[in-house]
Length: 240
Image (cartoon, rainbow, N blue to C red; front, top):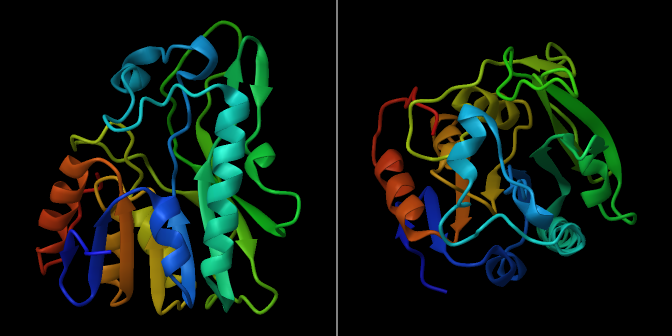
């Protein structure tokens, strides 16, 4: 498959991740945040921030039946797992979501046959959706699925990452560049992959840390946006 962009260190594929992942191997870290299916089963995102996602992500409407979404995410995680080196791991950013007065946990997205080593809490320091039916959520999770030989490179990072949300970009659901950099730097990986690349935060973080990275994205405008970010040689402090 021909890359959309390749500068020798960072590679972008404009494609479905399930088509590209089977071609990859010896991956040290999969770092990704998938669509959250906020409009699934007829739900509609509410609040100023989430209204930006009412139409999904362009190529993906973010409105799958919940059972189909669970099956899709499990397929993606299995495909990511197969790509890993013997020292590799998956860092999977997702969050508990309250719908219809019942919370759904991203744990159900992890296949039973894959080992969940740890859950890191990302404390965003602020919330976006204030309701009278539940307390405002101010955190997300990073689920770590790891091969037995996977090791981190630091003892100074705990399992609560207090990193403020960063906005200011065009992408409707960015996560902080600082978060991505911390994940990459703490693993010592040689190859980072993001199957839901979005605007390229994971690849930008990998490049800033001197690592090789591959991103996969179905929406061409985000491929173009990420390619522009990666063409900047200086550290990019914007997180989109």
